[in-house]
Length: 335
Image (cartoon, rainbow, N blue to C red; front, side, top):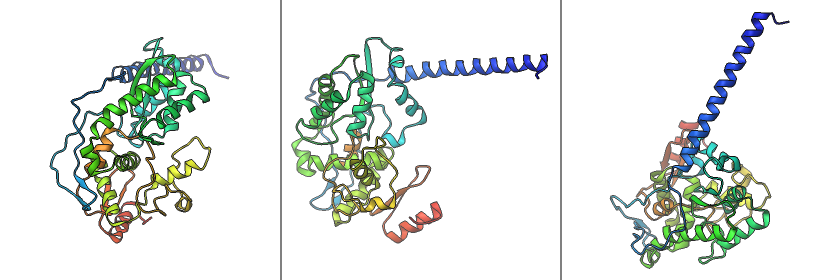
């Protein structure tokens, strides 16, 4: 049995732990509230007739990437470049933001919903539906409203960003806001002159691949250079992200981006870029304007292979032998 002094010490330590934990929780909530609600949000915006078209530094017809020097980087939406590069803090906030009590910290009548770069349409509908209390039928209708609007794309039009709305917003209202933002940020910048150089859907497909395969904006441009080089010579892209997408399309699992396994390379799907040359038939995720910009303005390189180390460092190679050697030097084995 505890003696009197031990019991007092135990009570003291327990009380101290409770106080520290409570203080940390309160600070976490306050800081996360500031992080989410003090950042720019998107409301219904009108068309801007003065938007700057996307610059283009790739010529698919000639099979060349041009040196462009500096390119105009459009304003970031303030989110992580993609779901894979979110910080631990952003991952926590992504979970909190779907809780009604958390949203009520800011306002009992409004809601802020987030679409992250690199998410599938189902993920976007789930996050928004959780915050707005939609049922399955409403979430399905929300997806259909966006995907069926011209230009028809199964993925890619759920424009990433933070959107402010009222707590009872309908699928129709949210679809209108998101499609308006997609038009302002992507479609209006994709002028006929841009489309004459790179077809719109090709750019959207490559941009979606970059959201899943690359890190920050500059790394997107580096990976885009490798993707274009492979397309120029008819070499299969062999991108793991497309295997993840193809695999998820054939299951009912809610984990949409499971790590690929060797057998995935044999999945019978047009999205399997190991067994099919060229681009997949459509985007695999929702790209930001930064990703579209990177797709249209790749880094000029001779590399045909690349990988990222566990710490996110980027390595590219011109030959398969060089690629394997770098893999062995980095991971202790080729793969």
